[in-house]
Image 1 (cartoon, rainbow, N blue to C red):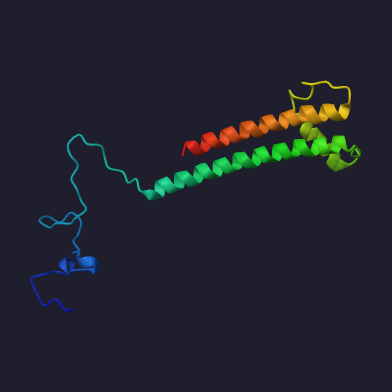
Image 2 (image 1 turned 90 degrees about the vertical axis):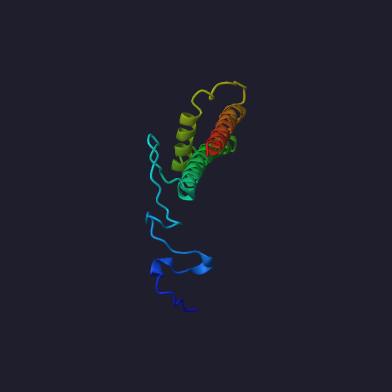
Length: 148
């Protein structure tokens, strides 16, 4: 379709969807995107789906990071419990490293209960620490996700 009206400029020619192109802020034309601010009005700032998406992604990343850290802590405590219950070789570097990290992580829980069997003591106290870390971690993740 060819428009033969010479009084129309290229900016006024119809485009897809039946709309007319206009330059923003041109006086006397409709459809421009420029608006003069009212006196005393705050300056308009763009808030589109890009900012919301970026915030959601950042919150999701933070929640995932907290979840991963919580999982690693619980795994270290659980592996230490397994090593203690099955009497792993404490001379092994891996067993020693896991035991050192578990002792650091179970700081206040190491002697909450004092059963006579040392295996049961490790299982109960370090297991309690693991459960506390797991519950607190899940609560923190839920609070972070709710903030989004």
